[in-house]
Length: 215
Ligand code: CO
Image (cartoon, rainbow, N blue to C red):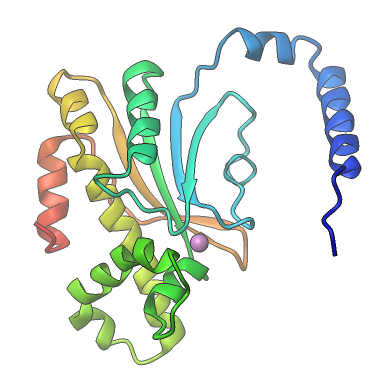
């Protein structure tokens, strides 16, 4: 079947949303059009069930967002690094939030022994994390529990990756206060959990790396 060329219902939704927003705050769009001044960069999964702004109750203009499959921060990914650099150097955000989620299809696919196409190259990074942590993961008898833990370990790894970028190293080096947080979202209850791996300096990053045995 040919896909429809006109997604009219989405435009209707958009008009309703713009009208409602204007009604509750008449200068909302003119203010936002003039500038954005977010305090946070969100690095999350592309999963449609994890909409960044809604989860943390932030309005347009308050959250700078980068999302990809599995919320990965890869040292050579110019897309993610550019978003990070823009957020830290130009917008001067104060917090980078790496947010994973339980039930992540990307994490599950990374551990399956069947091919998924090109995305397997991207998800290879997750498989590498599983290999590095095999002792801990192998000790978890239930598959679902093991995957949940891998979702957490993946977030911790990405927090470390953010910290090791030249962007964060330089920001900390010049005394620009920037924190990196590792969170996980549960699709079942809509709640976020702080993984308690927040780092705000090179020293804290070193200590997290030592704890995670990833140095
Ligand atoms: Co996901």
